[in-house]
Length: 285
Image 1 (cartoon, rainbow, N blue to C red):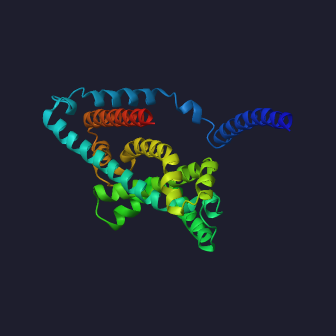
Image 2: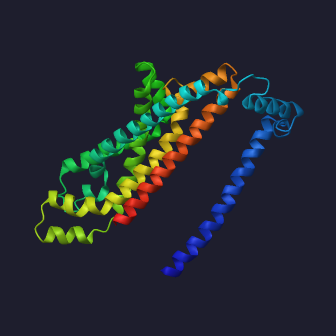
Image 3: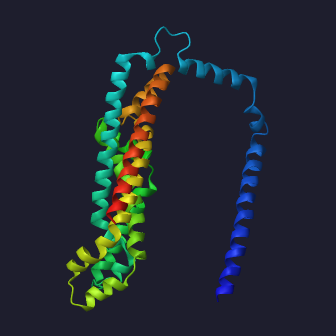
């Protein structure tokens, strides 16, 4: 049996490589069929001229005081950076809380009664409902959620945070649900055999086991949310993304440089805090 599995794995990896390579070649042939000069157009002299002109604009060539050297512009940009950070924290909190409410019913082994919970008919109903919510929310990208919510509410931090939260709620639900499904069931069965109630099994068996990985996934999604704030800002969800779009629209290229610097600073700080939190949790374990 082990030899058969090894043989299957070896051939699966080999055929997967050739399948991916074939898809790449087919994709380029499909593009070149409709646009034969698409590849050569990338290296036209006009494109290099536009690139140099854009870089000079970002560096503020020809401006008396580029935006990234103006203290007042820095003050405005740092306020927007703080708003973007608040939006990401709010989105992470909403997504995590909503995920905690529905993640347990969405686990297959919980619905089947394998973790000390009785297999009732309503557990199966809750399983399919929670799975549907997770699937639907993550199937729609953050940008589309932001467009819908900005259309309903006025532009601001709250619609952007809700758009990011709804999408990442589904992503966290899938990741954390798989953590519960893959956990070792032996300690849970021992608790049930010794007379532990479902609540005691949940508090002393399931949550202590899965919580470290839950927190790792939440921190990982927070890093992704920080990066996605720039995208949702393009549709009016406030923060750096909205000002970045306005700067592009009015050809204020040195402002783009300023907002990119603030955005890189925000991502760096978030990655640092996330790495520190992960080390702290690892030390606690």
